[in-house]
Amino acid sequence: MATLRDSAKAYEPLKTKNIADLEAVSLDAVFEERKGKDKDGKDYAYSVVIITGQEYRVPDSVLKDIKAIMEAKPTLKTVKVIKKGQGMNTQYTVIPLE
Image (cartoon, rainbow, N blue to C red; front, side):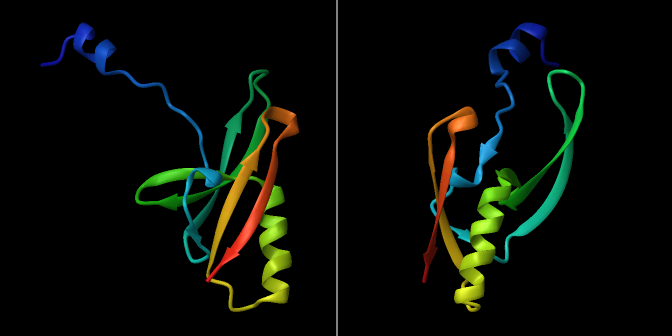
C-alpha cells in the first residue's frame, strides 16, 4: 500500500504535449477531438493525435498547413512540425517528409 508521502514524491503534473514534440508524425496516426475547460470554466475543443498511448495536441493552423500540402502532394505520408514562440505568439511550420 502506497502512502501519501510516496505518492507525492512520485507525482508528476500532467503536461500537454504538442505535435511539435515529435520527430515525425504519420498522417495515418489516430486523430481525435477532445473537450476541456479553460481557467474561467468555459468549454473549448481541441484536437490530438495518439502516438504510443500518448496524446499530442494538434493546433488548427497545423491541420490547415497539412491540408494545403496534401493538395499539392496527395501521397504525403509523414510530416514534421516545428514550433517557434510561446502563447499567442506561437507559430508552427509543417515540413513534408518522405
